[in-house]
Image 1: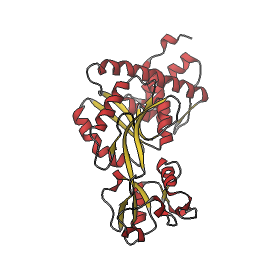
Image 2: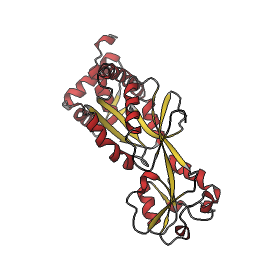
Image 3: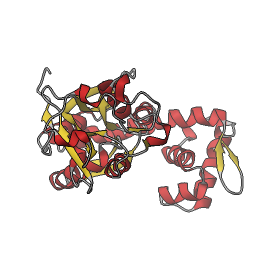
Image 4: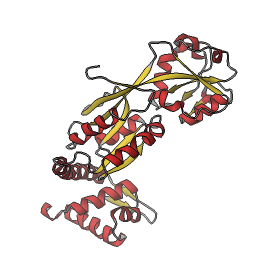
Length: 308
């Protein structure tokens, strides 16, 4: 087996095919023709003496050994990217592609505030954005599918480093005619006995809401009142279906029929930070991004001071 015959181009094609599950879409991503991509993958299979993909007319499926090859290929390509990042970082820390993940309860509210000034400040930066649940983003970091992610802390995944950015207070959203709407501030215990609408399982915000509201939130398991997004929750509250907790950045554009009330101090909050692989070679870019976010915070959140 002559491993020197393996090219980085072949590895890129294999990773693209594994990600898309289709040679045509992989070829489009790599800006080559499908026959070219197929031929290069076939050449790699012949070099290794193993079949990396099961081919069908509609899609391709990675084989068991193919999955292992793909994961190692990701690491090799990531290290190669790191060489380029290291060289660019001597002149400009945020340049070239950066694969950034963000949780769905934060992305729609933070990214419109953050991305335009970030792109203006770093015109050579090419952000590749991906939204996903925390567990998915952490898996993608470990698997080298992402470079950095904006998540709620803490995280306990081995090999993942974090840097806190800001604290985001929680507010209570209630129907405009709800009894709690008459108050200017609320305590956590005020939600006892009221129906608290939650996100579906898998959202870290669901667990945080349960921790704040406790077992007395409604005395029942409201399977019919779970949502997959904060926007859905907001409109469910406006329709009079119950109360919910909203992070501060999600308060803009309150729908008609809903009002929001702050908690009395000390207000419950979630801590938002950056997460990345400890082995990620572009750590200077991560720190530069963290510094930019902390210097471009929207109203309603609180900067995490060093040592907090």
